[in-house]
Length: 181
Image 1 (cartoon, one colour):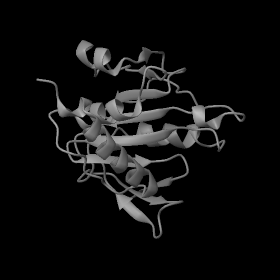
Image 2: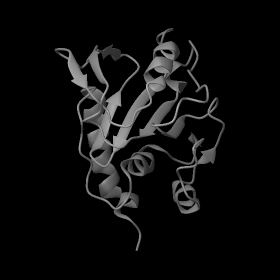
Image 3: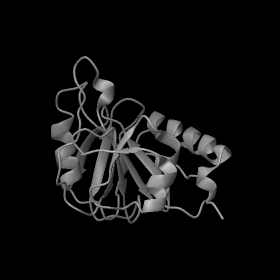
Image 4: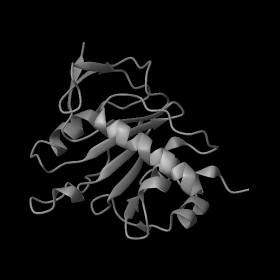
């Protein structure tokens, strides 16, 4: 039986959740129920045969690649990168160009949970009326350190999508992240 994430109705509902997540950075958005990890559901919704994907931590199996029908690419060239958020950053993503900043990669990180972590972060920026706090569980701190560097020459940079069984949390490149002691 094929998982529901490959059905158009599921992908439409997931797309609406993604729009809400990007509109309200730092807010946890619950995806429709499926048997797959939310990272796979996000990829099934966002990618197509014209996109490119890097899987440096080998999180996808052969059947996922076949269903996604997407081109494999090195992280430096990929439009989407799926990674294990608990691992330290070990690549440089595509940041786009001044002529085409929209070509900056979207990083989809898998985490233990989107809340309840030991490290707390304050978010500010577009879509955030008052500073909010997040505490992702199982996130290696190097992701936010590298993200700050990658996004330092705005509009160039990357967008992050944190995923877990809870759902998704978007961190567009315009969101400012500050660690709280």
